[in-house]
Length: 177
Image (cartoon, rainbow, N blue to C red; front, side, top):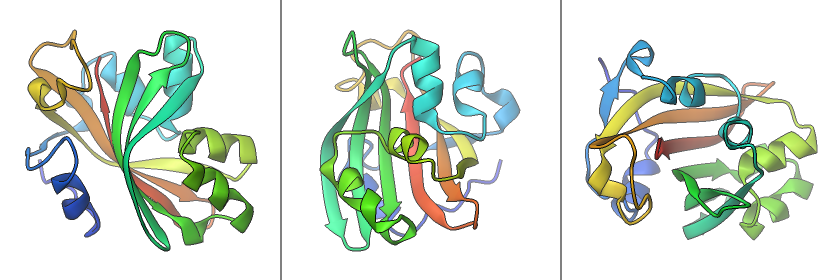
């Protein structure tokens, strides 16, 4: 499988993240097993999928962020709000110029997942997964304390895109399940 091209902003962000230099092993969408298939292979935001899957609202923790206006880079975890269980790890490039000015302070506050901000704002958008991958589970053992899947974790490289085809964000999303 040919790997998608990561945007040039990603290599420095990845190097400083928990992923470091770990290679992503790209796989075709039809080789993503359940429940990852349901959670990763779709065209809507991950926050809504995770909320439905866990039957809980989703909260955000920003592990690291960097503002290179108009680009906002951050490394995050998403959590099931009631239990605090980590349900996703992500590295995201947010293109602030693609958002209406009134949403930018909410995004920069770092206390609400981007998917929630987009959904509650009514701003039309869709996910355009660029590719799916695996990584060794020990790469994120400090994030996902126990991985039920064993030796590998599944993720996707995704673009959040507006109706006008402007890219809102580019995201690596990795799940513990």
